[in-house]
Length: 165
Image 1 (tube, rainbow, N blue to C red):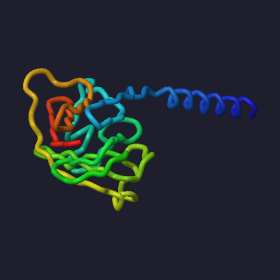
Image 2 (cartoon, rainbow, N blue to C red):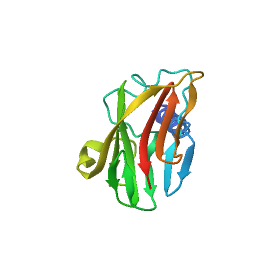
Image 3 (cartoon, rainbow, N blue to C red):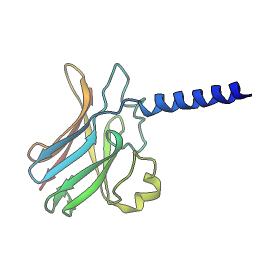
Image 4 (cartoon, rainbow, N blue to C red):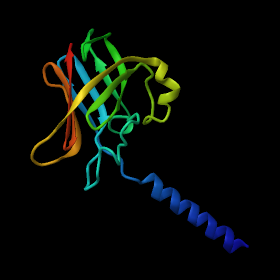
């Protein structure tokens, strides 16, 4: 009986170590004039990204690990819609031809697990067309904020949203 308890204790401890050491995607920050985006940066690693790893038609945390957060230093617009200065959780709903970009006022969310519970706190929803990247696939999910836009790139997909801040 003692051997059985010892074996079970060992197995539970070993499995806890394996799960706690699962690799996390690196946390990165993209910055532009009056805007900052903090997100987990997953890699492609020979996977089919959109439509499989990131299913079409479902809310995505727009990165890895905890939900992506975007901070605006002053009032502006995203996709032509007004946005007040502040920090928001950024979600997307990818589709093959267009994405829905969502700013939600509930901070501290992990992934998109509680999105349905918090979707009443959406402050902006805009649509943006998908462009296909020619050439090599983008290995790491990348958000950038060049002048006048918010850009998402991963694999062969690129989405640009007009932004003024």
